[in-house]
Length: 120
Image (cartoon, rainbow, N blue to C red; front, side, top):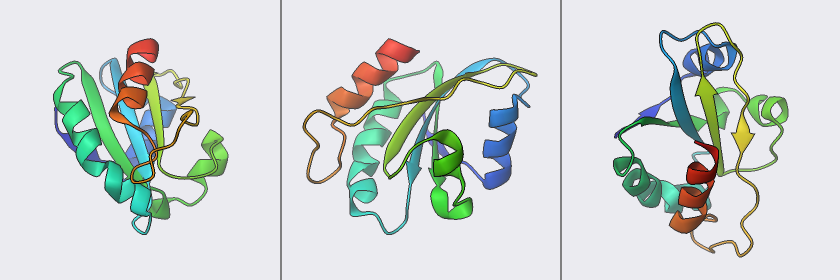
C-alpha cells in the first residue's frame, strides 16, 4: 500500500474519529531536518507494501508542533498505530524505543513489523 502524507486537518479528523469507515492506520511522525527520519523512509515504504489491509501515513510534526506533546512522545521518528472507527476517538499506540537503535534510521524493519503485528 502507498504512504499518504497527512495534513494537519486530516490528522485531526483521524484523532476525532471523523472517518467514513473502520480502518487500522500506521503513522510515521517525522521532521524534515531529521536524518533518522530520512533514513527510515525506504524501510517504511517497503513495510507498507507488505500490508494490504492497513493504511500507512506520514506526518511532518512541523505542520503541528503540539502533536508530540498531545500524543505523548518526545522525538522523531515515532511510529504509531491506531484503529479508527466512525465517531470514536481512537487509542493511539506508540512504538517504544528500540532496544538497540539503528544509527541510520532508529527503528529497524523488524522493530516496526513486530509492533504492527502485535497491535493490529
